[in-house]
Image 1 (cartoon, helix red, strand yellow):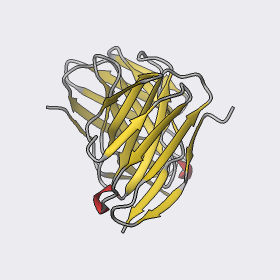
Image 2: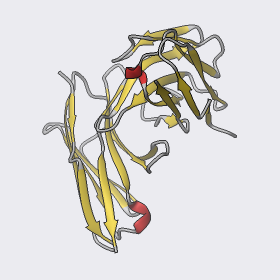
Image 3: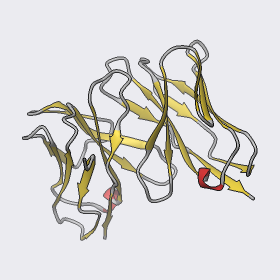
Length: 110
Length: 113
């Protein structure tokens, strides 16, 4: 079957670093995406990994291990505006479909 | 460049009523998708289209129909709404099936009484 697991909620302090984990089991793999979604808004793209390793983009980094079916999103220098849900999503081999995890709600406190 | 737009933003229906949700994109994208998002669950794919005139079923297609008569528009229809279809509906589009991200519309909140 196809399954994506990520923690339901996390809390972190402003200025700190937080790591959001994602494990997946899918019938095929053609890339992993991370999206940010603020309450009441649409998801917006954060990162894309298709090969193993770390992709860095400003305060955000994403890591992928295809052999372990594992990814994480690393957020540095947390800001209050980073309070949002973070969605892990895997695109299937055909490239037409993307399976989404339920999302991790991140609360950033002062 | 408006990106992806959805109409309406919010709607209340009675059980058994029908309605059509409109998605439009001005980025000349080939692929378009309809998702629903419910509390505690991820985005679930309802139907998708890989080009004008083509549609295909996603994970949860029952109770919905779609049409893609023009490349820029993707319509989602509910023929006989049920309370289980209360949800937030997102449309998305992407250029191709590679590393291109999906661009999402602002969502339509639907309440079925």
